[in-house]
Length: 187
Image 1 (tube, rainbow, N blue to C red):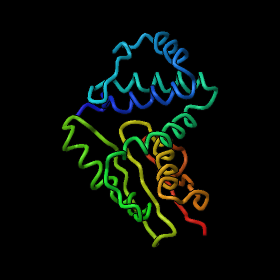
Image 2: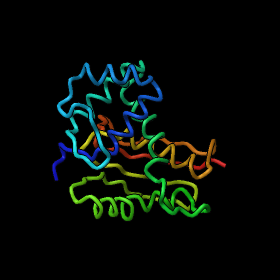
Image 3: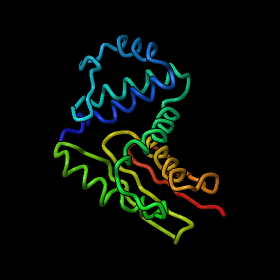
């Protein structure tokens, strides 16, 4: 598996997210300005250089006048519902139960469907009932802030609204290829 290549689904979702935030004209202008190797013609099943993803990511963040990490977090929040659409998720499932299934079930299914995919490792390393969970993200791609946004969206999707707190707890110096997050439900 080539870590320098990435499935097109996230490219498509990122362009759509940027279009909602910036408008189609600005997104088109940014993509033309970057003169991308692929021509920015992305499909969900295609494979594209991760370097293009990073260039788009930084260009869209700059156009939105936010940090790259904030863009990633917001994009992660917006993307989770799109990625789980069509999956049978029991309505009474606890968000921690869902998070425990991400790596062992969901990412395994991704690998079966797309032999050339290389999803990150997202594993629960500690769980204290339904009150606290520690999750570890590891990837060859620097997308820890995106993972943080996906965590936020998970808690919102499962109806936890304003009753959770997420804190990144990994040691300094931080890297976007590894992160640990603690998720507390505050009732």
